[in-house]
Length: 532
Image 1 (cartoon, rainbow, N blue to C red):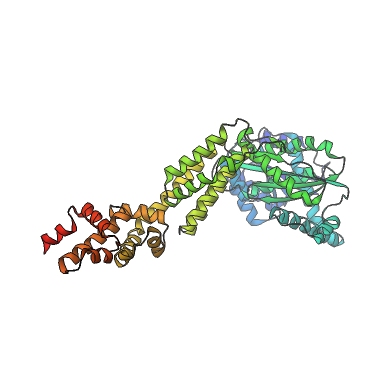
Image 2 (cartoon, rainbow, N blue to C red; image 1 turned 90 degrees about the horizontal axis):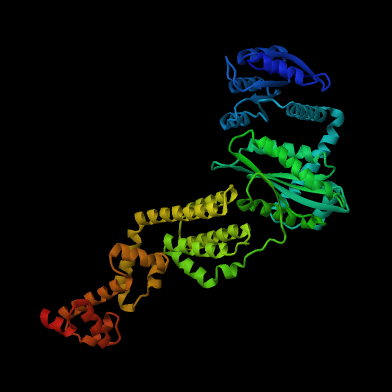
């Protein structure tokens, strides 16, 4: 029989909890009560309880401090925290301490009873696993779960199902031969930036599996970065109850999330499939359904709509426009890239029936193009990884269509500013190398592409950087080099103008004369008379 200790500085609360539960009926023993944190620690030592129901704020020793100290003394305790404070900081600290049960005042009798039931069930399972008579059965179940988890992970990675895996799935993974398959994605969102607390996802996973075990179906669950993906398997003709089941488990998940300020949860549900090889399809649909929350809103169940209209990206962002955007990225021209992005999104928004999934696709298309061009132009891998990570984060968090587009523009601007700052610090060296190369090869009529290749930069970026550092463009600087060499030859030699023109890179003496006069201000012959 499991022992329970109740701790609250208000005796009235302790007595109320005492009367809420049929302790003996649940196979529990109410071992005692305590009024402060220090007394709780003493009674944990003397009474050896299995479960402690405690307020998070108590005199003498704070509830969280008491839990931390108790955990150091014994890892066999299950805590149920009861608090009048809907405070994320308290909840987050409790999660980090390993506490998985958090109830808010006023205490709901059914919720407390259900929480105790879950703890009892987990305790009994642990005890059964430890008993030698159940050892073989436990090992078999562990193996089966491992196979199921591996199967789902393979699907999530996009790997195809081999005949061997399909045969294995029939014997070790899912039980129903004439079966149906359906996936749903439980997506947790947080108003702050950063990853969802792993402890919170663990709570959701345990709650979902408890509900699924009562549905009379097989299930495979896996925890991803910000949620839980589940594939359920049930006999043909048994689907009718699942929409109601889905709404019910969603309600329980949302109630759990409500205990932690700043969190929300959205369910995305795929469509039913009649073959295990199509499991990837229903998972993709569940993920797409969740993405639709940027229009439909959060804290709801969203069912994938196969009739959802999708935009033609080729028409939305034609190849000719993409080429222009590539040039803008090469030049690290934020305003031009932003203008192109705005043009495409405005074009998308003109269709009032556009799919919210197209918003993600436009952002992904621009992200891929930007990363490809920046990589080709030698941008540091760390900057590219950072940009990719920030975009993934904004697409993973809850927002609106307009909010997502706005944040994507900000990420582009931030990335470009970092690139420009780095290049400003190191940009003079490539320009010096370019000038030196032009000085050595000006007679050979070097092109911008040739010089850019020699210094390891893109032509577009070298052109922009050259004009910024030197003050004149590439072509004008090359012309100045040629004219300066021509002036030297006129002063120091008796060679003909045709030969001098050829030496500095002009095959046509008349054309050389026109360029020289435009650059220097007088004809070549007049210059020679003045300086000879």
